Length: 361
Image 1 (cartoon, rainbow, N blue to C red):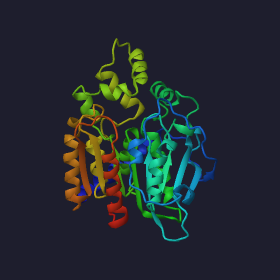
Image 2 (cartoon, rainbow, N blue to C red):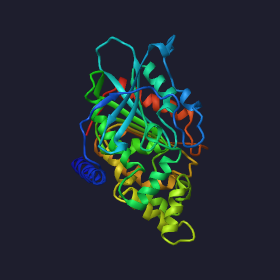
Image 3 (spheres, one colour):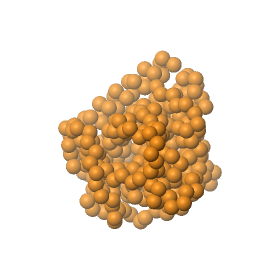
Image 4 (cartoon, one colour):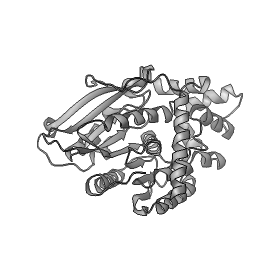
């Protein structure tokens, strides 16, 4: 157990060092009220919310009238992207009892408003539900190519980390803010997300123990394994303009594993090495962690999870918490979130944030 603890401390120390390496000056952690977003920015086709709408919710008449809605901007650093837009929903209750809270992360090219059915369902059940725009998305996207442009700029200039890491910095600051709120139990804060949002949840939990329960959906993968086993194409194609730009700059006729490795090392240092899933999953132990993927997801191939899952299971056993770790690959499912995943996520959070006690490390 001691070895696992030391490894977790060392991991977080080094990860924070990398996150701080491309950071603008810190600013006071201030949350400012703002207006609801009337026309949210989608940088691609609007995905279906059918799975989100299947989330269990309380049967409350006039639910929308019973919900308290907060639209905030939380300042996480001095740069322009350091303004973190939040959408927070909770029931209008006069009880002074602190409630469990869950942070919800959207996928590539969507936004926090797309998450609303998910947020409303959890709020109806007594949670404080928090949606946010990740970097260069939603309110943080000045154009419909903002995220793509930021990725290419990171490759060329090496001064930002828009793929996963910059948003993880925001999530560390968000955890600090949430633990200070009088309506939230600081020991009962969960995080989940879909696809890119699943990656955000995975790394935020590895970086910050204030996220006590974590459920990444269709996000956890092995970046190094994908390079070594030529299983990187589907992931690369999800943000292909970035890799095409790198290919041209490297004088290559086609994208190959050398291009892929150089891009990851440039825009997210350590993603395919010391911070990859074999190292970042085990440090979450003993806090509850449930990974949900599709068995046929080409962006998160199961072969890349064999070693990470073995190491994670060992870490949970060494911390006497094997029941706090679970992995399911849904049969026949590719890179999509399903109603099964949404229900499993709900049950996991209820088990550990409402019914059970949460263990921190």
